[in-house]
Length: 400
Image (tube, rainbow, N blue to C red; front, side, top):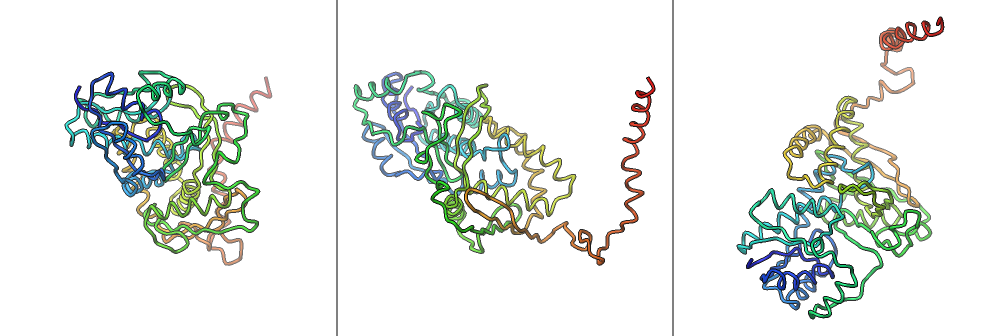
């Protein structure tokens, strides 16, 4: 093997992997860092990679692509795995994998390496995407193959001149524009309450404002286009909403999650913008879509989230589902007003250009156009199968 493209984060695992790939495979290593909004010093990461000994390093700014091609489709699909997790990490992995393949082709590389473990979901997301885009590329997962503990990795780093930085947190952190994942350490105990210093985006309730705040999100064709009337760059819009919602303590998710590999895992996330936007989007859909569309779309949305979570972004079914979802979003233009207060999030108002809500039908005033007398016949026909079955089986049971 002559050249390996390494997904490089700047952390211990992937830093050690540079020397490990050189030593085990006698390979030249090209490192790649894809910026999806993780708020890291990209220049410092590049400098570190070169210091360790990579042949070349690429920094790729993919934030806008991440929003347009991954986050926006997820908003349209109300992307929540198991009704909780907004798929923040899961959405970024196929994008990063696609960039690794692009660089592999550019550099005429033989393989792609990543720092995923054998217990998580990310290995599946990377491997499947890479195999789909180019099955000829070998995939190497040093952490999965090596199975070293952190202490053993530190020892290896010392022996091979890999710079070791003080661990920033006792937790394992992964973040991008759409969310921040917090794992490991004491959080592996499911009854342990995360301490305040585990969070960076969401303020503790004791430090949130004593007055509520209101946010109005405007959507066009199912995606957010402005916050409080301000049409800004999509990346800036999500970043600003993360800050504003987090300021009011909104955005923490703490739940037991079913990983693809079969284990239950305690997962803690900070996703202020994602929670606000998806809640607003779901509410707007109720204004515009029919009961039948909503009921069926719930099934489609759940399957869409499952595909993304389990690493099947490349599966044709995902595009099939996208086609249906997009067809429902063509008429989804409107605004939703949210109230944020002490960790609480509530929809308090909405309007839509093509709303199915008709106040003349819904009102209880004399001005209502609803024909109440028609209800009696409707009830008789609607309940006919149930009342007939009840009479047949329950009365028969009473005579036995």
